[in-house]
Every structure is written in structure tokens, then in C-alpha cells.
Length: 457
Image (tube, rainbow, N blue to C red; front, side, top):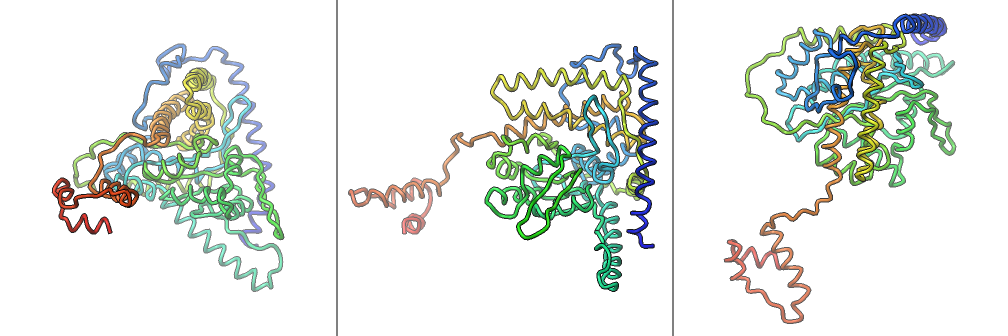
């Protein structure tokens, strides 16, 4: 029996076991909730969780809610690459979402979410964005190599059997540069993938292709996929591609100027794409002194073991404890007020971003809970995740200010700017007797007459 046949054979029993486990877990959750109508808020240091207490401004991505071994890994990677801790934590969580995906479901009221994150780290070049991303995705890349080698073997066997039976599938976890057809094909076949691009320019440009009528990613489909809605692409003369319950995570880096050019100028702050990302966009600050910090194998092995475990174990459906649920409801009330304030000020995009924070919060909680090995979403996981969302809201404000800036502020003119302006004036008005004393102009600008003459030719 091939590996593919074994997976197909085992899937029904695994699904049945999961349904049974989830029902048992739900019953336990309901019983505990009924037995404890007056929850103890000792973990929050406040008998009544206040939205003001849990939404203070956060300007650095915290780590206190992560398990201790991973906190040590984060500190090691931060020092080893002289990176911002924000980029390290964002990369860790992006890799977690990639490896877990829709195998875990978090519940709150009438909503269900998986471990799905769209993360973008933003800074100028050489500020330590790429190395953490590579570090945390390296074990997943190794698994990708193994899956691809298995796929090649199955394809060779399938062709040797004269293509009898179903064509083998590449059970991939990652995609890079992609068109809409490629994304949909991967989601239709596997249903759960991560779009990883060290430079997000390539990803965002592929959305723009659609607006130009080419074969790029359909923005509307991406927004449906974010919500796990069934998504299809109909192709003339070819079979329809359809993903019934797609789960797509994204992770990548970009520079502030690229974010402004590729998202702001294309209007993605208005059509909803801007609100679907978590931005790690710290304020530029002086990098720490260069010290020799050699990262040992301990951090790599610790993270590799986490990935190995997360890729193979099963997860219960995650329900919030009563304490976590009250914290969640409290912060939603706070965010509703903030969203209204943004909209009253005419900042519609940021109001919409705050409205979307609930989705991001549920998904972030799911990632943190599985990293800790929790069976439920505990109050401290919720409080930690709320702090992280406050950080991302703060970063989103910075990102929105960047992309909404219309660049109308005056700037200092260079000699080149002056020469171009004068040349345009000279060519336009010289028939009317307009003349330029090139020698006097050269002295005024501090350049040679030959440079003036060359510019005017």
C-alpha cells in the first residue's frame, strides 16, 4: 500500500475519532462553565477585567505568554541576528500557523477560527527581517523537501503503471511566487497552505496583475479565503478549481517604501486587504552594540522538536475558559468604541482594521495555545494575545499613516531639479526671447558651465 493509499484509508477513522474527541471536549467545557458561573480572576490581578487595563499601548511584541523554552529561543535568535524582537516573534508565530493550520479550531460565540495568520514584517533593508523568518521556517522547508521527494517517487510509480488511478498529489505546505490558478490548485488539492515570500513585493504584485487583466491572484478570492469561504475559479476549456474549506496563511517581509507603493497606491487600504494583515512595524531605533553571540544548536533543536510535534499530533477544539471569555468580551467592547471613534474622525480604514482584530485575536490565541500544549484557551493566553493585538494595532496605525501620506510636503530642490525646471522653461519660452546666462547660472549653482550646457542640449 502506498503512502497516499494509507492516508486515504486512515482518514475516515481519524475524522470519526476527531468528532468524538471534540464532542467530549465540548461536554467537559459546558460542564465546567455551568459549575463555575462566578469565575476567579486571580490571574488578571483584578476581580473585574477592565478594557482599559488590557489595552494599554504596546510598542514591542511581548513574549511572556510563550512557553519558557520558546522565550529562550526568541532571545537567542534576537541576539544572534541583532534583530528586533518583534520580527523574531512574528516569524515564530507565522511558522506555527503554517504547520498547524486548520487542524485546530478555536471557538468564540458563533465564530470559529483556525491557526491562520497573515503576517508582514516591515523595515528598511539590513534591519534583521529575513534571518528570523528563515530560522523558523527552516524545519518546515526540510519537511517540504521530504514531501516533494515522496511525490516524485509516487509520480514515477504512477507513470510506470501507465497513469492508472488518480494522479499523485504533492502534499505541500508552502508556496512562493504564484498566480491565482496555482494558489487555487494548491488549496483545492491540499486545502491548507502557507504563502511564504521573504520579499512580499512579489506577492502583492501578483494581486495587481489581476487588476490589469492578467492571470494574477484575484483579490476578492483572497478575502473570501481569509474567511474560509468556499472559493472557485472557473476556466474556459479547463476544469473548475474549487477549495471547499480553504485555509491560507501568509508570511513575509517588505520595506516601508514598498508597502506604500504596492498597497497604498493600489487602494488595498480601502478594499479590505490592508485590514487582513498583522504588521510588525517597530519604530526605527539604534541597533544594539555588535557583540559576539554565537547561536548554539540548542535553539535550533528546540524549535525543530516543536515543529516535529506540531506537525504530527492532533489537537482538540479549543474553547475559552470563563475567565478568558470575559476578558475577550471586555476587549471587544473597547475595540468597538475605538472603531467608532476612528470612523467619526473619517479614518475609515483604521476603523475597519480595529473591527478585524477579533479575527486576528482568535487565531493568535489558537497558535499560542498549541505551542503551550493547552487543551483550552486559558485567561493568561487571552490576556497575552490581547497585548499582542494592541501591538499590531499600534503598528497598523503607523503603516496606515505611511500609505495614506499623499507626499505633498515641499522638499528641498537639488541642482538637478533646478536644471530640469529651467530647461523646461527655456524650451517653452525661448521663441519669445527668454534667455539664460549659462555662466552666471553655473556660478550660482556652483557647477561648471559645461554641465549647464550639457543639461540644456
